[in-house]
Length: 358
Image (cartoon, rainbow, N blue to C red; front, side, top):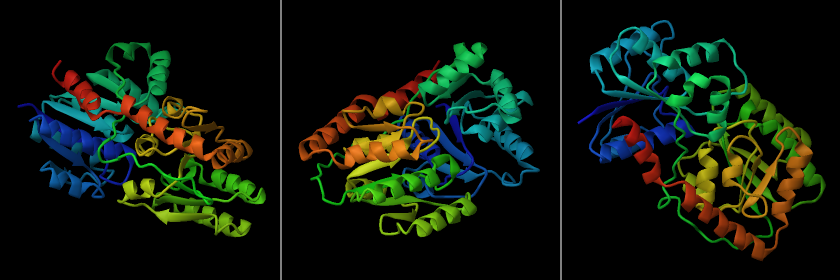
């Protein structure tokens, strides 16, 4: 039985963590010896792992930046896994350093975003990927970026897009309402473009559009940005149209009670929330970035907009607000069909197993 450690920063309420937790559970179901290791004690998904009987722990002394490299190396040397699967940039960097400094394991590094700019951190990380056995982007946009900028990576690259539990995120047919509920599930901070979206909401309100937005995503990542967003809503007097809410563990219920889903991010990899939303049959309005076009197709199940242009954002959202009841019904069914065709759990886990057994 191969011993596998899935390694990330924390079990917080992020999309990467959600995918890693799902992978851990699926690998355990295939009789691998699985441990999830983090270096921050944030436990949004811990109960899900505990319920599935997946060992999970916080690496001793890992939360301290000054001791983190040594702590991770010491932990991995003691655990002696056959494979490490790292999710997100810093954990992947740390796993590579552990290999470079003598730890013996095979390594899959998973790229969870699309690179926007290359600074020193990226240069070091991509150089250290020479010690990885497989490099797994979760989007074709990132695969294309890495192939074009780092041709030597090509033989190690294997894109594995996100999965969705299609039974859990079940389809629900909705009737078109006079005041549609628009849902966003994303951390409220600059990369998710909350301020730009608020500008679009103001434009829609000025046009007398009828709707309500619930943005689930308050966190401690950037409270200054959250407060600025809240102040802008109050300044525009649009509190009746948009609410900024805490993150929720009841996200399926949120999707089922919504009419439209929106994601105005400046960049993504493969967004979990879009994949989950279309699984439940929601039409989607989102940024025309990265791999979003694979899951959201204009005239079929949603609209794509320029995240840098609040006017375009408002225009495209307006198109969805004013579709007919028949179109609304069609968009819902099309969303579910796209999900069924692209987001299978079996395809996801089997792709990882193929690498592990190679």
